[in-house]
Image 1: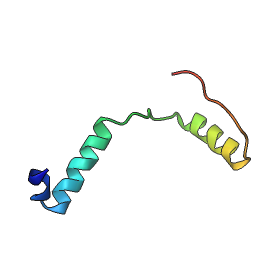
Image 2: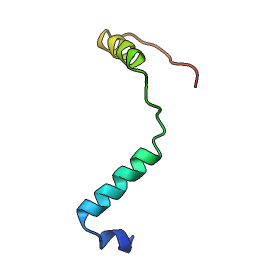
Image 3: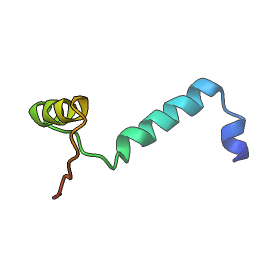
Image 4: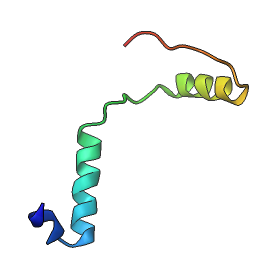
Length: 52
């Protein structure tokens, strides 16, 4: 922990961004599917996404 505390904030943030991009547990959604889910949310529709 001391190593990172000794680094400048910009370097710590850059490392955090790299880790976030590398280990993103959520896959990127296809634009049409993302729009569909957004539309459901705007209309307060309850739904369950099944699959993987």
